View (tube, one colour):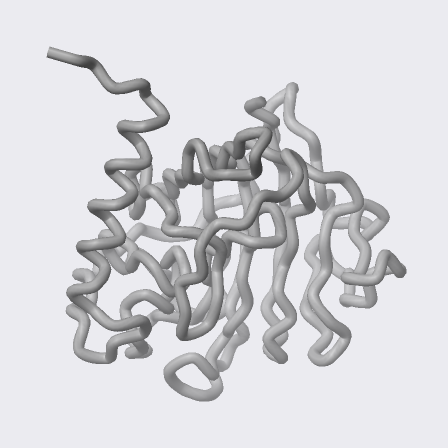
Length: 247
């Protein structure tokens, strides 16, 4: 029996995933919501390993800029940064590819709004592939847009969201897509994600970059691009962000 190369096997798996996605339209309100799991109380900031690159130490935004490369204008105080609505998303000065990323975030308290208009932000790998940040504690929204969803593609396996005003953690293992010299896709991106220590995506094969109400195809890009955090006009807080390159 002929054995296919690993890259072709992954592409075949991705095709199966895309086909399965057709069962539900993008942001389908009828898509079943994952079960709720209590992750337990929040703990102190998770210490960065000795080989990690600390992207935010609670003191300054020197490692971040806005989309135009100008100084980031989010607020920094008491060991966290906070989205200043309408100042724009921010991104790391340096680019990254394969990585282990740790992010801690907090939805505003008291909660305001419903659905997508409640504690909305996002963590983008390579500025293209989003893990949704949203207050999903007793807040119904479409399944592929709730907290810890790979936005527009995959709901989390469970809803492990803590109450607004409590710190939450994302631990993301990301493997970037690979492109050939002809710029054709050789291997799609994958993500494994833990939300508050609970597995919510197990080596998910991404269908392409993030988009709203669309699933665009992959387009060849650089091997390293910035991590970005989204300004969605909500004062979401972030702290203790670190990364381990896995290239």
